Amino acid sequence: MAQETSRDPIKALLDDLEQSIADFDQRLGGVEESPAVTGLRSSGQRYPDIEPEARRQLPPVAPVAVAGNADATAVPEAPAVDLLAELAQAAACRSVDDAETQRRQLELTERLHQDLKTVFDYLNQLIRHANTLKPVLPRSYRLDARNSFNGLAWHDGFVDYRSTSRFDRSYYEQILFQVSYRAPAPLVAVCAADQAAIVRKELELVNLRIQREEPVMLPEGGPGVRYVLPDAIPLHLAVQADFANDALTFRCRNAGNFGPTAYRLPGGSITRPLLDGIGLVLLGRSDTMPKELQRIPYQRIN
Image 1 (tube, rainbow, N blue to C red):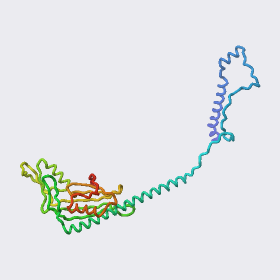
Image 2 (cartoon, helix red, strand yellow):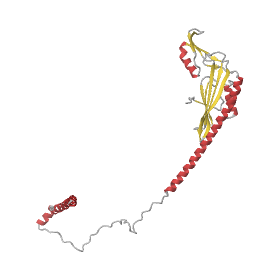
Image 3 (cartoon, helix red, strand yellow):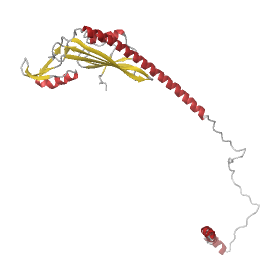
Image 4 (cartoon, rainbow, N blue to C red):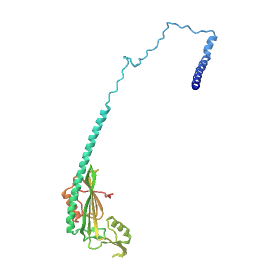
């Protein structure tokens, strides 16, 4: 009984489909004839007789290519492509380019490493001798037209380096040098009261910290300010490897004169005369860095 029940929906669907076809055929059989046909029949006219042997002349038709016809125009086949061979060749070329790029970068890194090592060795020896001798600095540091400092001597210089890891090795990346030029007494700077803000900014720029500030009367008359400073002027030098541009960057503060300066030198250009020229500036015997160093805008090191 359950089996007959499950067939009822299918039977109903088939009956509905047959009924739809019958209705469609009935609608086609009941279509009215067109007025033209009706008119011909009602007027007693009849259609002309058809000649069985008549032949209609048609214009020639261009042949159409049929699949499997030997006379049809053949379609050229696409050339065979060895995709894996193509990819293998491209990958091999890329590997060669990457190996050449890595070789050049390694060569550049080695060159700048040797440059920095040479700089460090030279400065290390210079500091060792100067810390023993403590030579007097034959230089006068001028802050402005009113204030200059002299009678300074070398005191407590040191040098250090920082390294970086490249190509699974450690390389020199930066040299840090500092020395203090000490005076026999605390340094003093005097300025007019209306120039106090400007002088305070200049002292901050050259790394001279104000220990005490006092109001004074200027010799030419009028109110002024007297700044008591530390008894030493610091000099800083940082030599940085620029691996991206194959160069060394020198950043200085108070080297030769008050203020920050910066220079650039192409890699592989470190020579003994160049280092001696820098050494003369550090000892106060020269105020000008060697001409091989190209002056550039100063930027802080992060």
